[in-house]
Image (cartoon, rainbow, N blue to C red):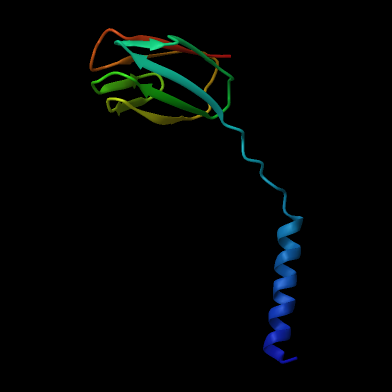
Length: 115
């Protein structure tokens, strides 16, 4: 065995030993929610989610025109094209109520309750 190969083997073994002795950071599980936009309304208009958990909110727009999912409290402003859907990734939220609405139509609104 050459010196370079032996050195590489020892270095790799040391690196693996160090990597396995470090604490493992567990990724936080993401909660999934879905809301449908149809006939100018959100369904359901009230969503519920666990606190301190990342969220993936799927917005399905069934209407023939684009809509804009907007929420100042969630810090979100996303256009969802007609007959399509989008996924909005939300940071872990504190308990509370977060309002959202369609900024294009002006009529549809809803609430995300986090507990």
